[in-house]
Length: 414
Image (cartoon, rainbow, N blue to C red; front, side):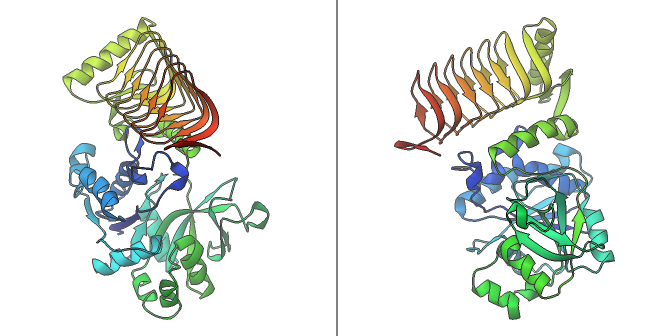
């Protein structure tokens, strides 16, 4: 049985900015909780007992440790049969995600196969089934593969009939891609991967600082004749690496995740409410009554956090509203995520957008296809279309901005 997972979580997540300017990628709020929590829950339900997080730097470590601690609370919160133990990589500089795995396995003396997942991935996969196939084929490494339409952001594998990988190309141009089977970043790897980096070609990769799985290690293992196999992921898999993918994954999971795993209960129709306290239950009942009275209109699936206040005559569709959010009157929130402790004024429209934590949105403002960073202030009568607002920035009232990044001291077109 596969017991151990390793999760490199130290990447800079440039494509997800401004949400990751001050927050570790794996701690970005998603479905009203840290993104990584959903992946760890999936691992725990698949029988994983220990998770090692490949943190990078003090703030990355502090972000994760302050929330996850040693992980023992998972069992009680989600009704697991056994504890999940979480441990952290020692404070070493790393040369890539493969180096984080190497350091963890060497430091903690792990001498058994592990599963590696990425901190910004969400998936529906029984890792024990992957491990069975890994053992059956005598693989050194097994890579989860998922068919995608656009291969440009992924490593792509060319496979034989038995799914042995004979060629691997990292982020090819579409016309050069050997297939549409994308690397999901989910790997089962034998313990001997540590030995591989101690001598020969593996040692050379380490000395040259070429320690990325997709760009360096996987192609080298295939070139040297190691048995590297693919495993076709039939369930969902999302790389939540951009705001667009974030929202796509959010809406899919609103419709397809178990309500219990969202820590919610159905209030009315597709409206889900979080929280079990008396105050939360009273809020759920109030929202239900207001829906029946047509004071609130909810369409599709909506996830509402704890201690939320929503004004009169609001319309919400396929969205998440996180804990302690205050929404004014006559607002429209569609296919969007509003993170915790945000305050939204009256007559605000938020469409296909993400509003970061603790932001303030003024009245009569429209936000479309945009991302507002944590602790930002957007004035009254503002119009933002395809805009990224960095954390702590302020957009003055009556501004109309399109296709820009609002950064400290200046505004840059992108």
